Length: 62
Image (cartoon, rainbow, N blue to C red; front, side, top):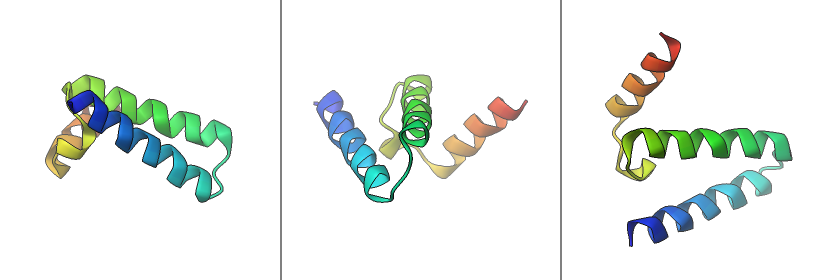
């Protein structure tokens, strides 16, 4: 069920980026980032807090 929710949100994300006129390479980069975040936390990005994301991006910068 969690995978279905992620897949649905992921598809919405792709559609929104397309409707915003983003280039395919930008959509691909954004989508890879979302998949990496989800994999890192083993959770859907919608379940992550702002603090979770700050720690994640801080870790990437280090």
